[in-house]
Length: 314
Image (cartoon, rainbow, N blue to C red; front, side, top):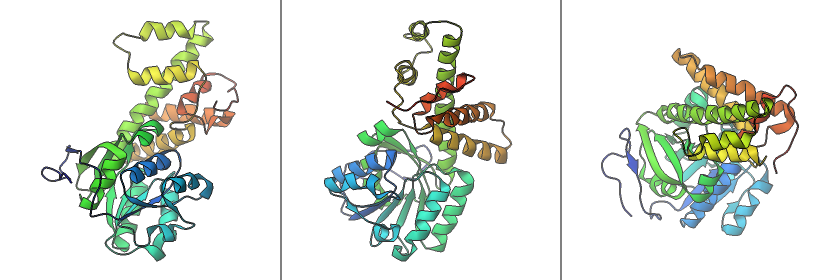
């Protein structure tokens, strides 16, 4: 196995190592939703033993056919595991799952908290880890459903660079970017990157809604930007989703609204005005109220209209 050059926790370092490890026998994955299911498949493809738990067991069952052991409780999942991963909706869900896992935890296990939970909840989870003697690594991921399925996420990590995480991060991501040795540094980085993505998505939807409201062919808007200095792959992907009304979720309206609240919470603590994030959160809430909460966040396009059309992802 190829080792990291230098200190893995050095700020700004990126690492890429070969799959497979003789230091990890079992990984426990708590959460097999849009992101967790793709990550679980890549852990199995990397030859890692995997036990999975999800609040709704049906969402975990497909991984059984690929070699995962599906269990009924978090405690069963983490018992004897070398590495524990959490990929759940929010800080409250992570805290609830880890509290339920206590009977199976043992001091010295490494816990990579990979959900986006915000700075306040992250501090509370780090305290739980200290209380139970866990090696705690703050490791939210950059990317949505497609990178999770392809194993090309960017892992944003901070905390101790425990070698047991090398094959795990290598299996789920294209690279690992260490933000620092302090747990919480990665979460702060994630809030900046996800804020950019969410507000950019809202801007695309708002522009297309404005075009439609003004009687402009949205296809002409697309042609005007394509190939120019404002063009980029992300614009093309979200514009295509809106124009084709294909809102199959990569990252949901609900998740985006939740993250804008976490961004605002962190910004308040830092004394920073995040006007765009707050406005985007309001758009996401309007889209959710119109029945689009579980669709891709590109469905915030509908928030541009006085009456939000009710729809479902195709």
